[in-house]
Image (cartoon, rainbow, N blue to C red; front, top):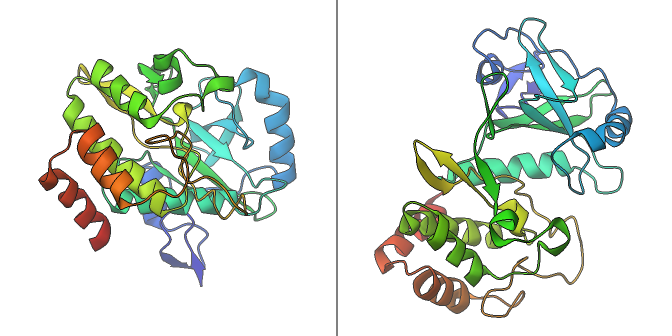
Length: 275
């Protein structure tokens, strides 16, 4: 009995469930294994790194979904999906990220279509559909918070959660709505052990002529990856990166900094608890 790596539902002797395939494309009937092993995918990611607009610690590849042939095809440009194979040092990062993203979705955090697919050696590779693309080649206007703050990849940790809220006030069309979304994400990241949400892991996107927080991405439990005495948040809140508590996260950040009402905060907390 197999379990679909896209939907997690039992799928008998099939590799992917019909529901999982339909999420990718309504005309997709089957999906071939990736043409590479995990090691070969990492090599391809290294070779093509200079051609990709997305960088980071995890190896990444750009891909398109070839619905006619039933395959993910790796490309150098105009990719609609990002593939992340198994890491050579940190085990099960694709599973970690996919599960954390799925947990985020269950509490109402908007996330792009994502899941896992099998490589040639049956290792799991994480995929996510790019939200900064539409159609075949058109780009959607997206800016990460490092760009908004005038920071670089090297200085993406040189900021604070308070200043991040100021950016929302300055750039988003309806700041109160987006600050409520931010609050939920901060609580979620704290609960799931994701302490690496730096400036480049937050973005704004233009949707229907409104500037809003983009769908969430790069969510994973980094605590179980980077074992040891580590910080609990990437950007300090009230000058602290560890020993966070209810007074700091809810009273100070939620109520004072984000200026959220008790009703909004309680609604978010109850939704998290109920799920």
